[in-house]
Image (tube, rainbow, N blue to C red):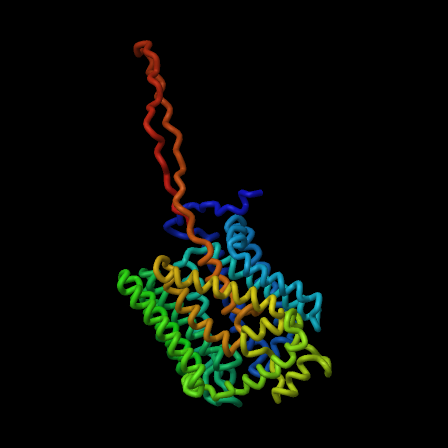
Length: 458
């Protein structure tokens, strides 16, 4: 069985994709669009409740099956990627273990299956493609979502623009303007990295950068604008670090300095930092919600209440009822990825997440200096890390951003195997011609066998 856990070197990438490769690529793009949830509002309407829709939940099952098929068709690579990311799968395993103490075990089990296949999708696409191809999978999905958002905003303004809260702000194919802004900030760094790693289509990706920036401005999301500045700053740091050892040292110094300044502002002048993010000191009521969650966590700090169980608990004496009473409103999630994992899986789950988060960051920093993945890793991680502070984007079911984070973590953990020499057997000696002198055939040449090198796909 050990051969299944070794990275079998694939054949060299053909000059042109065959129909099977194109089908796999198209399937991967459709999976990204599916988990982006950019199609949900078109079915439910702007005021619909996707969580309560059986139809919406059912439509995810073909995506789960497609992800499973893509994984099985490259089983050795899939298993190798699985074995390289133990902390990730221990975290996913905790989701299913939490059914034992969940306050709503049916919901925990159902959503646990969803987060399992969402995570599997990230692993499958990462193990299947190299960095340049992976970026084009993400990029193609964002291209479709961007054109859909322009279509909604122009032709269907009741869908594509906010009407009650923040009227006039664009939300594209999503329910909220901040979701559009967040996705466009990530799309921008994806297009930049794709332009750097795919020079043949560079101008296409550069053009898409302009469209993504236009949608971000139309969303009027200040937080997303700050996230984009942070991501582009990280991309600039990668480019600078690649110029040589001196520049790498300078970049590292500047990066540490920026982090110290942000920490100083957060601790001593948080109002200024919140103003830059477009938030008030309560982060639009989030601090009240977080205080209420912390109060409930005092009763179950080590194990939590079960994955995704709190926000669907109908009990009048359950944790959601008390959180809603203390916060003054009913929330649908914690608006903080770290707090969400804590309230779901307790200290154990939070510890696993923290370890995996640090592992991915360390690999991402190392990729800055020596891997093509650094063009995506550092910018994406910078944006993702900022999002974890005010939104729930970690260990989330049916979520494109979580799929991207998993794919990034898996890709960083599975370096390309070295070139493998495939020896070619020596050519047999030619048979003697008829009528020739009866001379014994010369032995085969003792020259070393030629080697054909197959460049494996990372």
